[in-house]
Length: 439
Image 1 (cartoon, one colour):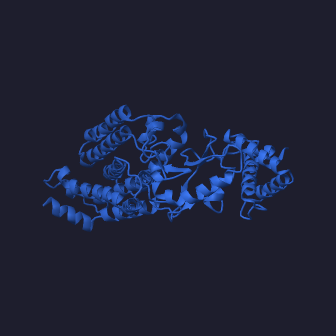
Image 2: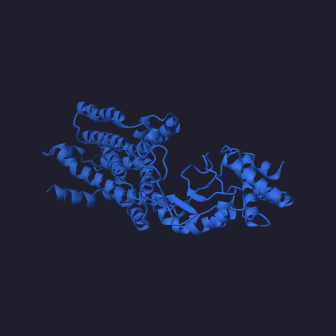
Image 3: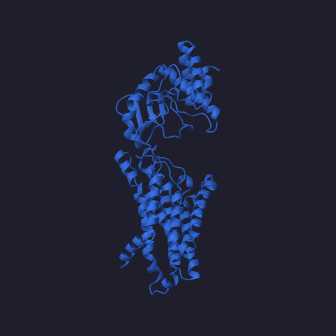
């Protein structure tokens, strides 16, 4: 009997009209033509972060469904039935939660298939954050269902959507710098993370406890018949906050580095060319251009003898080894390695095989001079006559000027200037242009 009622709810109520659009929106939000979708945990984390926008919509959808009896003017009729409130509301609650959670999981299916086909590193337990997020969107639907029954106004749903969005985004904007574990109560928030992150089990369990508590509060509101029981309905949420905060880690430890994902995998033969295990499928693309670049760098004294993928933040400080080219590897949506230059080899040679660093993010003038010096060094190593046209005009003009100044020197002096600039770049110094031009 209950199964038949659920089927009727799916056909006749707005449950499917809430679940299907939510799933479609989740699928659209996780897609990005510029991002490679071959990473398991990164795909899950992107999907989970979208919960911050999907959660208020699910809350509003549940509230709209919750006012159904009032909208149809059958509230008194339903309350006069001999069935309990729980038995009357269970089918629609089950259908709504199932549609939201199931749709959320299925919307990631194509991303997981891409990761599987890419044969990249599959971290253990990658699915737990996905299941916790699915529980979160189901809890939003149940909480909205209860609040919609409690406040059956047409304004309830839109106001809940706005309030949910303000609370989620506002808490992150105001308190993100504090690192408080309370930030992890916001649906979709897992602190700072990247493709090398894994979600700490404390974060998964803490968020799951919180979402279960919210779902319990929504269910209690849905079946409450008196003012006293409606007040008591808040108790699960209060207890859930206390338990979740005791379990959750600090926000900056919610998604720590996965050491296995960052483990190096090297190609056969010499010179040594290595990538992280996460990007092992792209090692064959990298080997030949990396070794050609190392041969070109052999013109310098004490040249590097290896190319190794770096996991540090691009543009940030990295402790570089003089015998190693620390390479930032980016893969775009079509599964090819993206470079800032025309080829992988040129990208390695820019900066004479060094990591790009040396200035604050907002210091545009310093970055122009750093980029110009790095470009000029790469042009000199490749024997090019001028900077490419696609470069930003200030960088291109300074690079051409530096290259002309460099070429006017004796050959030994040119080598010494580029070697000195490389040593300064290894130390992440900002005065690369002055060193290269002798200013």
